[in-house]
Image 1 (cartoon, rainbow, N blue to C red):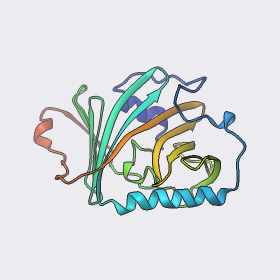
Image 2 (cartoon, rainbow, N blue to C red; image 1 turned 135 degrees about the horizontal axis):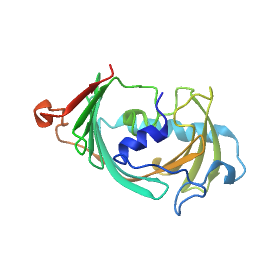
Image 3 (tube, rainbow, N blue to C red; image 1 turned 30 degrees about the vertical axis):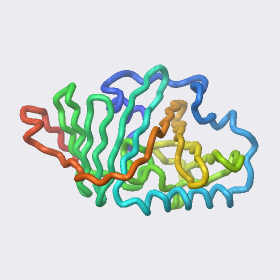
Image 4 (cartoon, rainbow, N blue to C red; image 1 turned 90 degrees about the horizontal axis):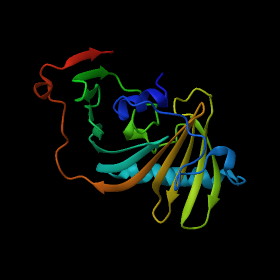
Length: 219
């Protein structure tokens, strides 16, 4: 199972990702510093609205920035008809609904793999990044001031590759502002810059554009 450190080695084009000892400015607060929790019914309601917002969009693009230690990297992904393209750093990812192609242009490599559709990691399975309704997490409302809410998600089986997830939501409508992953001492924050409808044609993996690249097939 992939961990955040493995995913970020890919996302940050091979740079080492250090653990974070204190939260970055503007990042969602870490679990040990979170305010006292309130009943989880409101948290579950917000997660249903969040998932509903994304399920209602047939095609959309999400732009984001990932912060881990001293490293920041911008990226975006586009979802359409059960597939997606993801661009981050020097890398591109293509998913056609069955197979995922991770293209690292700097290393001239293409990694081919199946997709874990149960993952809620935004890099591993962006289609499901904001859908927490499968019972894999136990939600708790940390704060709600009427315009912004903070929800903590703890894995119910203790095996999630994302670890504890803290989601900051804007309200009216419910939209994600950031995700903070806390996995085994590593903290990674994903800030959502924009969510826009997409009316174009989704780009697909083109083997001709990767002529001469090493193909690494893990299927």
